[in-house]
Amino acid sequence: MNRTSLHRRRLLAAAAALPFTRPALAQELPLTPACGPQAGLTPRQTEGPFYTPDTPRRTSFVEPGTRAERLVLTGRVLSPQCRPVPQALLDFWHCDENGHYDNAGFRYRGHQFADAGGRFRLETIFPAIYPGRARHVHVKVQAPGRRILTTQLYFPGDARDGLWRAELVVAMAGRPEGKTAAFQFIVDA
Ligand SMILES: [Fe+2]
Image (cartoon, rainbow, N blue to C red; front, top):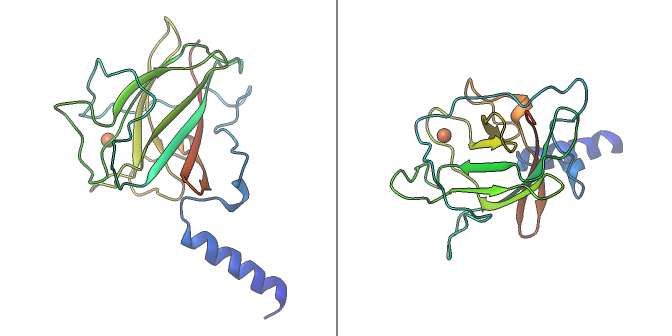
């Protein structure tokens, strides 16, 4: 085996050990999908059976003392013309580390508003993979006064159900304090 192929094998082995990490994305996370004339709107998906309205406004779902793996989800909300959507509403919900939804309260549920640059940031945990579904985060996104986008976000290399779509996969990067995911929503605005 020459050195080049050994190096490549090591890279492949490292990538296999980190299924949610793209090694090339160490620091700068590209937002997905790219915005532009070809991009179109972020695809809609089913709300599923576990949406609860009137969620608390907050940017962290992390509970004190949790041992679940942390996830920071960041990104932007843009118009089809690639302009930021200030004050866009983002209402997130997902299951806990055991695959259960809180249908009585608001664990792992909450809404926030994008900043003046259309940016958002949610601190949470990795939702578990539960039977029959790819790992996912539900979200509703709405530019002020416009149509609500209901969809789901997915993780790289996890196409284990028929709903997983490449257009809805976040970009991942690893950090010492946990993993960071990025996604760019393109909505009616
Ligand atoms: Fe779900």
